[in-house]
Structure formats: C-alpha cells, structure tokens
Length: 230
Image (cartoon, rainbow, N blue to C red; front, side, top):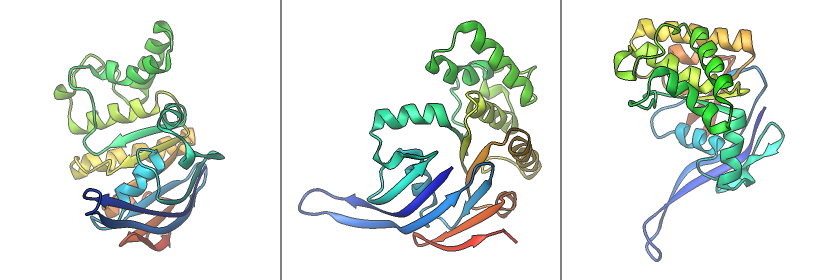
C-alpha cells in the first residue's frame, strides 16, 4: 500500500544569500500494508505532520521516494498528485475542515461533484453515506448546528464517499471530548474491519495510538521505535 524509502526532508528559510536549512526528517523508511491501521506518534516538532504532508503530496521530499499502490508518487507533479488523491485517498482533519456555508449533505457530496458524477448517482451515494455514519437525519444541518462528534462523522463520510483504499488522518480526535473520542475510535475500527480501509493516523494521544495494528514513534525526525503499542 505505502512504501516510504529513505525519506529525508528539510525546509529552506530566508532568501538567496542568507538561507537557513532546517532539517525535519532524516532517512525515514517504513511500510503500511493494505488493511492496516498504522499510527504515528511523537512530540510536537518530531516531523509527524511533515511526513503526512509528504505522503499526501502537498510537499515533495528533499531525498528518497514514496510509493503508493505501486505508483512512485514522489515524482508526480501537482496535477498528477491531485488526480491521485481524488482517486485513492481520503482525509480526516483535527478541525474537521467542513465548509460552513454548506450542509452536511453538501459537504459529503462535494468530492462526487469534483469527480463528475451525475446528480442522481451522487445524491443516492451521499444519502447512503450519511446513513452509514448514522447521520441520515442531519443531512440538512450546517456544521454549526452539529456537535463535534457529528462534524467529525461528516468529515469521515466525506473522506469515504469516493471509496478510497487509504485514509490519512491528522489528529482526528484532537477537538473531541473523551466520550466522543471513544465513539469515533470505535467507528474507525469498524470501517477498517468491515470495509478494509487502510488508515495512517498522526496522533499524540495514547488512546488513539492504541487502535493501531502498529505504531511508529518519531523523535527529532527519525524513527525511534516501531511495533505494537503497549
């Protein structure tokens, strides 16, 4: 599913003649297999978010390669990666990233519009997805009218509506209370078990890390531990 091979990345600060190189990731290698839940943990500044952005294609690695579903995506240009994301990836964010002026139904429907699906097909698909996440009675509600847990379920529904094989999640429970967090983690387990969706989850939360089949720990831009979270 995902092969990260000897990835090194740094950011360049300043202008020509006065540049500062800021190393972030140093020779990172790991794999994520189809159908796994893999969590990546580490303190702030350890390189977790940069790694997720590299895998997502929003930035390109300084060195090394990233292969997803047998495609060397680290060589894609922006247009190629945008098309690849639409077909193969879904995203869950800490702050939900819902469009406030659109209803829950419209937020979930949006990726189907971008893909060019017909109106009848996308309305049925969206309605089915709302039911799947337990929000069939909330389709006409705006994000401000939903609880945090409900908003995150809309976010997950939007991520799943194109049936991507891979979901990338950045602190998916960071804005939720402990009870809602447990409900969401159970929901992720069910999606993984019932639909075979692969999850790569960035987190600093031990409870979230425990749902992973494997956990990769980062510190100072390096992998310091990989295995089952105790």
